[in-house]
Image (cartoon, rainbow, N blue to C red):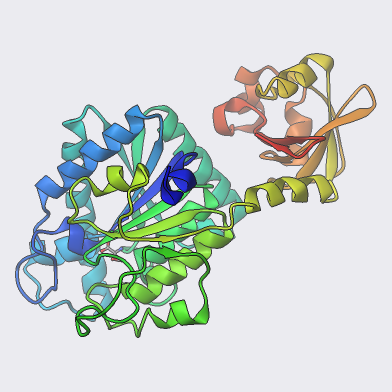
Amino acid sequence: MTEREQFFRDVNKIVIKIGTSSITRKGCDHTRENCNIDPAFMESIAFQVSELRKQGKEVIIVSSGAIGVGLNELGIAPKPREIPIRQAAAAVGQSMLMQDWSRAFSRYGMKVAQILLTYEFYSDRVTYLNLRNSISTLLEYGVVPIINENDCTCTNEIEAIFGDNDKLSAMVASKIDADLLIILSDIDGLFDRNPKTHIDAKLLTIVKKITPEIESYGGDPTSFKGVGGMRTKIKAAKICSMAGCYVVIANSDVEDVILKIASGEEIGTLFLAERHIQKNRARWIILARASGTVRVDAGAKAAVLGKNSLLPAGVVDVEGTFDRGDVVKLECDGKIFAKGITDYTSEELIKIKGVHTDQIENVLGYSNYNNVINLQVIYGNLRLI
Ligand code: GLU
């Protein structure tokens, strides 16, 4: 087994970021009318994703292309600087993009869902929890979530704050605990110098640590074609590395590129991740001071220890004041048996304790994921489920 095959053995949740240049026929430089969507390319992605699903993997797509496709549809070239025009273009292009994704996936009997994000999902915990829950529900239904920036309403995304889908995809991958982010673009990976100007430029197949030297290979943002360029891709890899997620940057022109990457073939540049981070998170939960205690009955304890959901009917009492995302202790018969991160606030839990699952919505006016008390539970011995 090669090094890569070993790294990718346990890869389950994969985010695939697809750049505008890959989605559009012959690339998209906004100077000519060449920003048509490439249906054959989309179909090849749909085919590969359907194959990964058959292998039991979860796949989320981050798709660019809204602005490019919209500009093309409106007959606007070259790419305008005016934000309102680009926003209008994004609104036109986004729906076209989704129609084509939907068509491509339907050939393989799969459904897609559009998720448009603003940067709030990253800083606002409730927004993030909602996003995470919607994504996991979509995946459970076998739907492929297709994410883009909400360019039409949010100038930050188009201009400075995200500015590119490389960073967005890294933030998504790190927040939803993906194992691998594949960034597909029109370049083969990270080179030690610009391959377009240096014929002796060498492709790096693996980056174990993002050092200042590696960062210097990114060049300035305009070194390579495309919105993000290499610099933003290295930044994306940095975000993912800290979250324990591998990144592969590869050329979308390679046949079955996603399947090859997922099977551990040496394609593009692999950025290693700090895989121990997940364990650290478990350790962190154990060491973190709990903000409160959720007392449960014996049935609920058995369910949780059997890796089943904690239902509100099993909650006897709630102690302390905590928010969603806080660490709480789980107690039964006066003994702490687990700790976890809660998806409900203490106030909400007090209202729904002892209540039948079907009634959560009636009591709160809304309900969380699957109507269960979603807890990321850790037991005594650093065990993460
Ligand atoms: N969100 C932009 C679009 O869909 C693309 C940003 C990027 O290519 O990185 O057009």
